[in-house]
Structures are given as structure tokens and as C-alpha cells.
Image 1 (cartoon, rainbow, N blue to C red):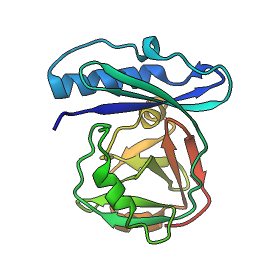
Image 2 (cartoon, one colour):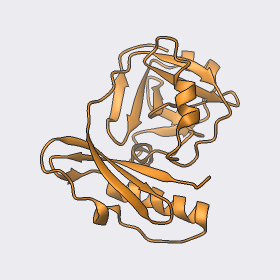
Image 3 (cartoon, rainbow, N blue to C red):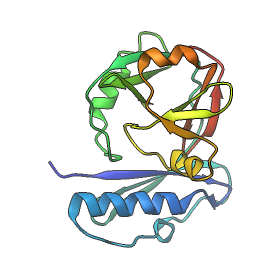
Length: 190
């Protein structure tokens, strides 16, 4: 099966957000999957709508294959169901069948929290961070190194640690982060 990948880029009123982080992830994906060191500027493929909030989806392999724009409305998340899996989603694969299958196990919750090898990773659509009363901590081994996560780590607004499922009780609150929502504290529960 052909490996296809995608980037989800936030576009608001014609402005493209965090493009340098998407470019870096696309470069790393092409390099690690195809052995090609190919500088890429995704901005060259984006003709953003001038008004409104959109999710720009760029599908690629070694080359850009498709660019589409979708009006964006954030999913409300107030509860997470813990699910266990050995899923590999180290790249932003276009094929999300395994993630979708895990999402179906949410049992009435809004999303899932995936635990792999005893460690907390991500939700089905976002990286996660937990507040310990002092700092926001994100899992050292996420399923996917998201662009917002990478930016917040670089800005030293979040910090990496190994988080086991039993560690969650020591945290006071949690937040999700992805390209579309940025960093959003969740008013809910696990």
C-alpha cells in the first residue's frame, strides 16, 4: 500500500498559521519515509480563503498531491476514555483506520486518551498536556509530534516527561493542543 501523509494547517481570514512547523514535519516525513532530503514550503501550494476559519488539508508523498479547504468548527471535548493500544502513528498518515477504530471505543466520551506500553500518548485528534500546579507537562513519547506541541516546547510553555497512566491522578487539569485549536484547557474529566 502506498504511503500517504497529510498536514492540517489553520487558515483564518487568509492568514496561514505556524507554516514553518508544518514545513519541518513534511521535510522530516519525506526524508524518513523516502530517503529524500527535499526542502518544501507548503505555503507555495496554499491559496487561502480570505474570510473565515478553515482547515487546509495537504496530502502528499514525495510530492504534494492534493490541497483542500474545509470550514472549521472545533469539536467540544469534555471527557476522555482511556484506551490501550500499540498503535504506530509516528507520522501523520492519511490512513487513520486504526485511530478511528480506537475512537469507536470511547463509550459515550467525547474522545479517547491512548495509552501505549503503559505510557500516556495522545487523544485521537490532539496532543495532550497536564498541569501539575506549576508547569504544563506533555508526554515524552506522543503518538505524533504535533506542530503546536513542537512550538510550545520550543517556547518553553510546556515540558516533556514520561507520564504513566497511574501518574494522571497527580495532575490538577489537562489540555489538548493541535494545529487548529492551539492550546485549549479542557473543563472536564478522564
